[in-house]
Image 1 (tube, one colour):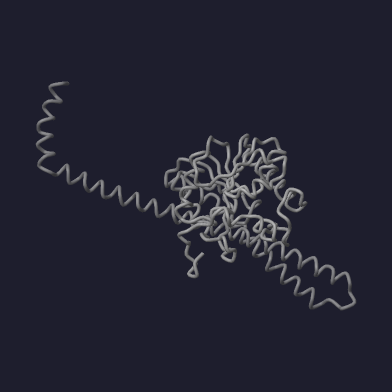
Image 2 (cartoon, helix red, strand yellow):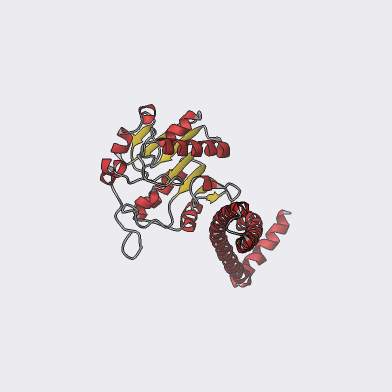
Length: 331
């Protein structure tokens, strides 16, 4: 990103993802914390991607799969162990060449902007497009949406520190770009098993009405759930405060109870934050859908006015005068 936080016009290149990028502590296991070697032999990474693969299979049951920006192919290898015919493409020759021997044959060096050679049941693109310039991003989205009907997508909305993150965007912006190609988030599928901002998108034909209905149907229960959990969190905090106030220093059982309550508070707070993040994303997409409805209504009103003007015109009246008798003669 530039110093103003705007995308750079020039993207990164294959040279930016050499051995130094992969082997010098540049990658972090999402939920495990700490920097570790990015390879199939590393327990944290292998278990992480096996878990992701298991969820993908449960949600989408893909027989064929492509991971765009696959790096060393850890997700491809994990899916292969689940019986999926998975492939990967990455711009880094180093990443492909240093992949595990069991998966190397499934990977190829190439750009995300290039048309994909065949159709796939599902495509994933995980933390990749933020590395690309704006024009290349659009080409990459075109390539993916032309080769599948299901996409698992993730791009950090806030990591501006990584030097190669030159095009960081909010989740709503990515969702809008996919929507322009006829792909919409499935709000009934929780993709946070991948990242908190991940999107599971499917090709669908929506009217503005069906789109608004789909999001509202999911948004209302989520709002209710957030309210219930927020109240439960506040009550737990009050109970914990009362427990602290009445507990003696020597009363170990009360101390343990307070610690358990604090743990429950933190767990509830995490759930609330996750739900609120999903709600924000849904509200952004709902706003876009409402704007689209407004535009369509405005177009309809303009067309209706033009039709009235045509019917009131002399040409229309003359035409009606001529075609009316002809129609009766034909009858």
